[in-house]
Length: 300
Image 1 (cartoon, rainbow, N blue to C red):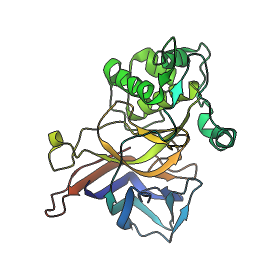
Image 2: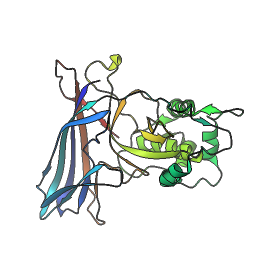
Image 3: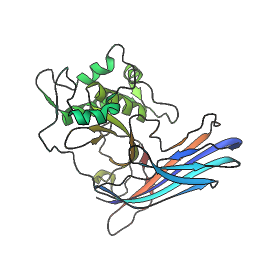
């Protein structure tokens, strides 16, 4: 797999000079056995009075910036390079399965750790989201977990219309099902709530996606796609799943039970003036011998 270079630029523009509250950034890709960070740097304009990096509860690196003074624009630029070697999903101790009408069974110790990720975040008074998720579980016998999740993502892609919506919180899963349309984060929330209704632990991913498939060529570019979620299994660990069944490869910066703390950049103080936001992410993936020009990469 390639070495991936990521450039992330987010710019906030204001109608008049404003003061800035504390901002927290989740730009730095996480390190693991299949994702090794080669370099990372971040620049901010205007220069913050304080910039520190901390670890959040998931182990992700979070930048904390505090400012003095006022300005009409605030810009964050992050550059990172990583050696990314993802592996296909597999099982270690037999295939994880789902049974109709039963919650997925975790070991007691795992269940205690995963309880927040299993807890549903949106009301489902009539059981519409739960009934939708049960479509992907066989009426008799047991359904392989990977098959059920694959069928769910392909149903989202085939039955719901995608619409761009750059601002605002995700809509409820019920609204997504009723309107038959949604944005990236709307589909991700629907998938996660559907998985949770089956007793599965689901987390929201913050990161970047790229495509290294032959159809995409060697430029690593793709179309805008929803962010991945992570479904926790048992001995084989979590699996990353994209709500639309896309083959794009995710690189992770952090994992959270809900989408708001997983945003790549956010102001943590209430009362901040509402900006006009311009965001862009560019990337290249590199063979061992030849670099390529920067191309689009999509933040999730």
